[in-house]
Image (cartoon, rainbow over all chains, first blue to last red; front, side, top):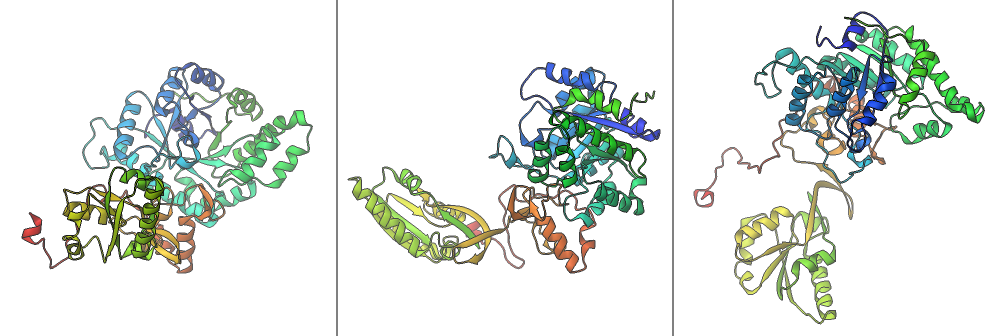
Length: 308
Length: 225
């Protein structure tokens, strides 16, 4: 065991993992975090705690992770390269591990231009690829990036993202290979809507032997409305939403669109369960945490396995 | 070359507030080529300042001189006999030129009239684009001659990120994705192996003022002191 986290145990035991996501509040107070966590408890193996997502200031990811931990849920602590240099990153990792955080997701981060402080200086001292290597070095060599020994090194289960849909498509699998070479243990993909393209990506990853070296969790975000689908298609960089999805949502009664969105998500999850090279699903129900129990139920991923 | 753009006129006037005798010093090298601070721009700015002073019933005495390079001691000498006649120097050179001027005449305020913007190229007359951040550890040899530090909005060494948008950067559809371009160029050259290797964290050298002494040269004693 690299970290002994619940997510690692689930994946290692060969169970189909199911993870969720929770966005910290834009303010103080633990109640909102506890409230969102209450819907996720028992439904997911680990929950991603986003780090100033879309470059908007929120409660720090490690702080919200600790609240979630108190609620009996396992956090997956997200860290972006945009807001911290290598000193701050490493000290946050030491602190997070000390207080019980065992999973981390290493991300570049959305550009600060999108957020509520577009004037900010983006740090990007290290990139996501280099962050993975840094956490691995801390864990496996017990050394800081600078080379000094760490007293009681942090044992983190290292995650990263992969976007199978952004250009150039042929390069995506090689970038995944680079992340594996850097030391990543698990991957959570960008939201998948274009199943055909995803199948081609996984096929390539299987052929290159990558799926034997890393656990890939397929990213799923149910569409809540036609507007959301159109927005994701046209406004979110690197997102691939086929017209069929939009047509299918448009084809149902207006009161049934969200339900159809969940139905599509469940069909995808069903396919992922049997897809070679896919080790689980990462459900990003954005500001829809209360729907997770229903989605988990309908996707037939309950009850979640318990491993001692 | 170093590309600069003139500061807003009101900001320049604010900087000059209270001064009556001004020498505006242009620079004949980079900022002249990019049409920001050469001889012509010195004349234009001086005419505007003169006019504005008169309209405000607060005329100032303003003269102009453009030297070959403000970042070169050899050319600054030409100013030695003149600066004593002025209360303040306005410099239309890049930040390096302004500082070299200020260093030579520490008793006189030296004010910048341009904002130094980047090291870039001349796409057409009046149109310049950034290409280099002078990071001191050039990776162009394995990125197909395209700088990821400058051209990628996140300065990623192992791109592209997930925000590549049909060949554009996530920050702007008109901004090409640096890593998409790097990929395409290396693919065309049959050199994709260059970016299969992980580039380790950079040893940032542009965090402190840097000095370069070329092989075979040394700091002259007199200046070093």
